[in-house]
Amino acid sequence: MNDPFPAELIERLKAARHVAVLTGAGISAESGIATFRDADGLWARFKPEELARMDAFLDNPKRVQDWYSHRRTVVRRARPNPGHLALADLERVVERVTVITQNVDGLHERAGSSRILELHGSLERNYCVDCGRPATEEDITGDAPYACPTCGGMIRPDVVWFGEMLPSDILEKAFAAAASADVFLSIGTSAVVHPAASLPVEAARSGAFTAEINVEASAVAPYMDVELTGKSGEILPELVSRLSPS
Ligand code: OAD
Picture (cartoon, rainbow, N blue to C red):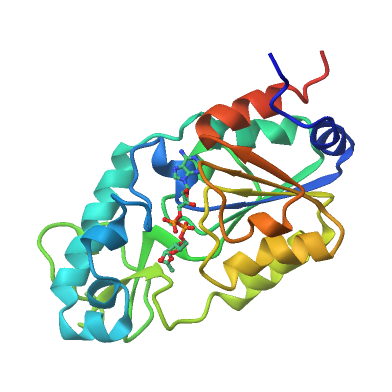
């Protein structure tokens, strides 16, 4: 059988001191969490303009809070899949691994990755839009609408909505990681949402060896040195097992 991995990818990974990875919803698909833009994705079933915008939240906080509570329940029931676990394992063979994720599901952390940059926030964090106080589990339990016990303001998830800026410190670290990585992997993302989608291009421009792992070519495929087509939960464990000293 032909080796699915180009020799240069294996060599570059073995020699790498810093591997940076950008992940999107596709890496969590095998954990049973819906992606956004696939045929059965969230944006095919829900309207982003009603759920992921500040004006939609102000218009109908309960609808937005209910939707995020539902998503939080789904991810809490889910488990990291072999793709997340393989990225955590990569830390055993590469000195520095930076996982930059667009996902808000916390599965990289639960899988054991230690250097994670959450570009779009986390379903596990909520805060009051008026006083900024972080919400406790108690504040978001029971029926929405959820209000801040301190000031009565509405509680929102700490995720980035359309029209909002990404946290600047995290974004800065992500671009620095892309620019300094020896190898950059773009995994399970359609790479159409910026600025996250600029990271693989930044890495390629800065001289990293780049590879995409996706069930189909994404928008950044033209910038990649290698295209690995298939499920990340299957490809990543196989790839990482090839790097361990035998
Ligand atoms: P998308 O839904 O846009 O893309 C998911 C990608 O995963 C697609 O390219 C699929 O081909 C791929 N895919 C699906 N299953 C896979 C598997 N098992 N293995 C590997 N790849 C697989 O999700 P994102 O790119 O993450 O933003 O979307 C980016 C952002 O758009 C999200 O963070 C979210 C959304 O609007 C915000 O909420 C701010």
